[in-house]
Picture 1 (cartoon, rainbow, N blue to C red):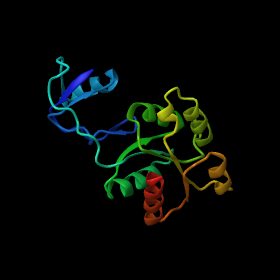
Picture 2: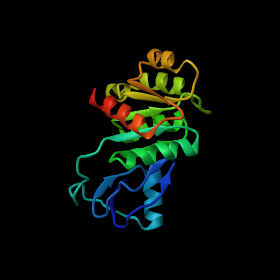
Picture 3: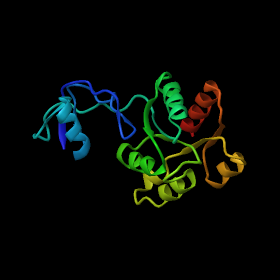
Picture 4: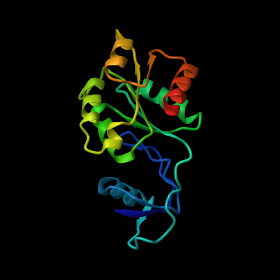
Length: 180
């Protein structure tokens, strides 16, 4: 559904940060999310395909953070957002796959040990996606799992950050992953 954003959305829905939607711009939004925008008064239907300016190409890299621990996910997102990255959050691998397909991030930061769908299952599912671009979006492991370096090699991750992490270490790993 095409919506013109008429008020600044706040918060998150299913781990998707809403603050990247800009008032005055027109977006193609999936129906469930569009219904929330309409109900909250953040958007209005836009029927003409050529009506209104579209969002500009992203200047910052978009990073998907997939971690079931709220505090760790929020810390990771805050560090990244505070350093100019656009961030989307997902609660587990299943939500992560949905966000990956919907938002097409530049990088995925992935925990391994999660309920519903763990990091191993996420990587396997990502590789099976029919869209070749989605299947090749790089994954940076951020985990406290034992044998994490071996896991990173097996999963063909572009890097590894051990939990607990230093914010500068995370930022360096993200920059390196995005430069590959």
